[in-house]
Image 1: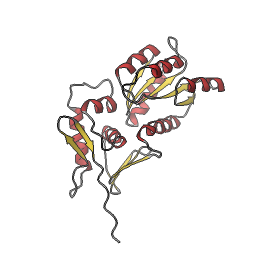
Image 2 (image 1 turned 90 degrees about the horizontal axis):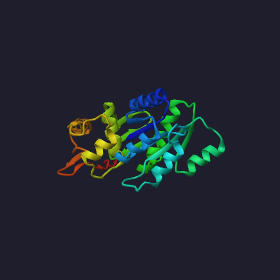
Image 3 (image 1 turned 90 degrees about the vertical axis):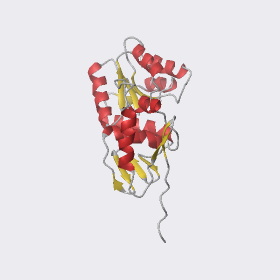
Image 4 (image 1 turned 180 degrees about the horizontal axis):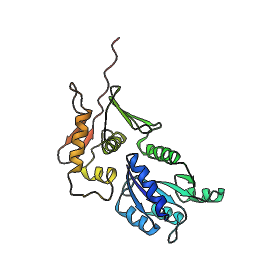
Length: 233
C-alpha cells in the first residue's frame, strides 16, 4: 500500500516514514501542503497521514482540496495528525473529509493500528487477517501462512501479497502495482515488479498446486482464490 506522510516537522515526518516502511508500506514524504497536493495529483495514494498545522496550506485546506478533486480511483484515506486536541478541531477535521484523527504525541503502535484499520476499509476487511483460498496474511503480526504453514517473505514481497489479497480476483497491471507497492524513488522502467511477482509466486506455490498468482498476458497479474479442499468426514 502507498502512503504519503505530510508534516512540516521534518524529523517527525521522516521518523514516521521510516517506521511505516519497516511495516512494509511504500512511503513518500511532503513537508508542505502545496507539495502534498502536487504529489497527490500524480499518485493514487491509498492513505495520507496529514499534519493539521503547516505554514503554507494547513491540513484542513489540503484535505478539503483532496476531497473536491475529481476522483480517478478510490480517494485516499486521510489520517489527520495534530497537536490540537479540542473537540472543535476534531470535528473540523472530520467535516472536511478526514477519516480518522490522531493527537500528538502518539505511540507509533497506535498510528500503525489506525493505518491498518483505515486500509482494511477499502478491501472490505473487518479484522487484521486477510484470507484468500489457502493463504492467510496477518497485517498486524506480518505473518503469512499457506495451509497453516508459515511462508517466509521479504518486506516487499509481504507488501505485494497484501495488495494482491486486498484485490482478489482482479487483474492488476504492472503500473498499478508499481504505484501502490513501490515509492517515488523506484525507477518506473525497472523490471522490479516482474521479478518480485515471480519470487513471490514461487514461494506461495506448493508442489501439488497451481500457482495462486497467474499472469494475464498483456494485462498484468491476478491472485486466484483456490478454495481449500473440504475436510474428510
